Amino acid sequence: MAKPEVVLPPVVREKAAQLGDAGAAWLSGLPALINYLERRWSVTIGEPLNGGTASYVARTRTADGTDAVVKLSVPDPAFTRQIRTLAAARGRGYVRLLAHDEENYAVLLEALGSPLNHLGLSPEVQIDTLCDMLPAAWQVPPPTSPNAEPALDKARSLADLVARLWQDLGHPARSGSPSTPLSARSAARPRSTRTVASSSMVMRHPPTPSRYWHPGRARSQASCSSTPTGFSATPPTTSVSSCVTGAPNCSQAMRHR
Image (cartoon, rainbow, N blue to C red):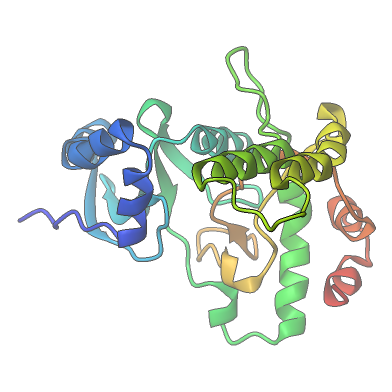
């Protein structure tokens, strides 16, 4: 059987191009990486799936005939943190990790069902379903190991991004306005220093039904997220704390956001 063509969305090709030589090497080596992972994991990687913004995503079949999904990210340290979080979660609130290769930014994931917003559920049921799932996901501790990278400080990284782009774009700013990088750093500093490792949690994408999938017949859990965001932070609101502890008012708090 002929192998499916490796087709990447334009946004993924652009993301790789922004990485320079590392991105170019990833693009040229993708077919060989697919062949290598098929042998290593004893899987058959099939047709690509739409929707990836920084990864090649494709349907996959394991040796015993189980449906799965392979995700091959462009070189990105944040993806390594995502892999470690999925490994620590063991399917609790997140998609189950079947196999992974950190060196090649590759994961083999369980195949999920449809997004919550495609199941014909009422908004209230969708919110209740999300709240049933969120406590398990938020209680997954940030991954640690002797060689683990420190948690990504999102506030500081965004401030650094603003400073870099401001420099790259030739210092765009209105006459008389404060320096954009200084303003960004001033706004980020309080949030950055507020992140304490002992009380931090792995953050995830906003809990909207379009980002969460029914796991299918093999799982009793109502819904799960595909991947974490890759950074840690302290819980910012009482509604989040309610969901973390499983408090009865979690659904009410979410409905009023």
